[in-house]
Structure formats: structure tokens, C-alpha cells
Image (cartoon, rainbow, N blue to C red; front, side, top):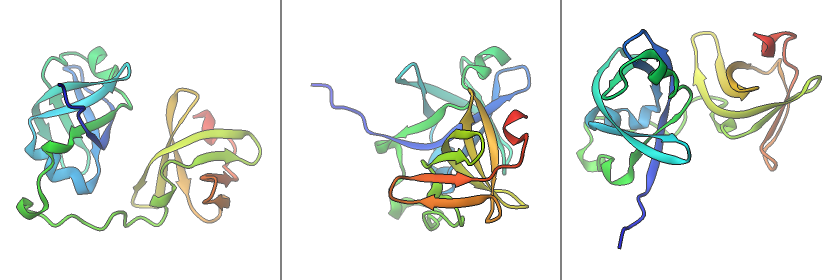
Length: 179
């Protein structure tokens, strides 16, 4: 009997990098060591998680990854904005970690991940897939009209937060979603 695999989302593919099939990825801090010590990741394509073997990883704040069998820009573009997974059994046990996992989320607005964003003028925007800390402020990644948009998270733009319904009403600057 084939036991159902349990997968953990550890990050996401940002975009293609260069012409040889490299991709930029962002990995959650608490899974960085797991990512770096595994030779295989899983990426969700057409509702199944496909295994990819890692050829190389370079960079620090924004990692650039080369996967086996992803040999050109078009193949890398096909992975754009896809979630990255590891199997639960591939995670490093806490007692074998070299680095202590940090607290769950040190960002002020990290709890908004998964919330639906609505602009008070234009209406529904999309779901927050990730909150990242940038030098100037925290930003939310949202898929809007089929593309990834960065939305600044600060008190002046947030009209209201409904924790029960997981919604965020914002007063977004004109033109932000048109970029």
C-alpha cells in the first residue's frame, strides 16, 4: 500500500534568471537549512508535486537555483510563482539542526498571509501569498490578474483588518495595480 506523502511548503519560485534555466527563489527562514541540505525539492505543476534535483545554489538574500532538466529560460519561466515543497520526512529533526529555528514570523504583518486584499475603490485584488520584509517596509506578494504584484503594507494604506473573515481592506495608491 502506497502511503500518502506529506509535503511542507517551504518557499516559492520568484522568476526566471538568465538564459540557462536558473530561477530566483525565496525560502522561508525556518526552512533554509532544510532547503540547503536537500538535493531534491518538489514544485507543484498541474496539481501534482513534481520532484526536481538541485544542481547548484548561489546567492544569499536572493538565491539563484539551477535545477537538473531545467535547461533554458522557457522551462524556468514555466516555474514562475510556483510553491516549493519538501517532504515532511526530508526536514531536519530539531535536535540535528545547526541553526536554531527563529520565531514563527518576526514581521509585523506576517499574520496577513492568506488574507484576501480588497481595494476600497477598485474592489478585490487577490490573496496574500507571502509577506516579506524589505529595507523600507513590509510588502505583500499578491497574484492580481495573473501576475505577481508587490503591495506595501503600512498603516496609512490599511483601512481595516477583519481577522475572522481573513480580509484586508486597503486604500491603494492609484496605478499601483497597473504596473
